[in-house]
Image (spheres, rainbow, N blue to C red):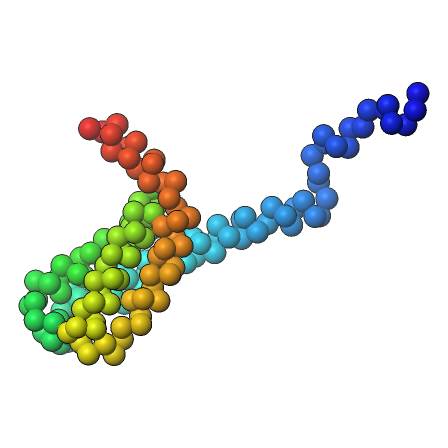
Length: 153
């Protein structure tokens, strides 16, 4: 029997070398980085952005007075930010929450340019990038959420 005719088992056996372990590591590292990004953004929007609006901190109240919509709008935006921050932490809601935050950031950009002289207009635009990344990476959760909602209905 020639060597070419001999069956080889190495082609079908699972690789357990260091190379195969490091090849799988970026996927895990990417998931950890994405989850960390979600937690950081959630904490920012809950603690640093949403709660000051809900507690009517003086800086937040002054900004919303300049906008001209009154306190109700400050409480509304603060509620959206806190709810969105919590939703970012719930896997099935994370994609939808990131998409909703993109809409909120577009509104914040427009408001910043038109009513607040545009001093911090770049901040909402910069935040759109990580939210778009989260929305894209967690898009499979959207179908799962639709299934859950339809199952309940």
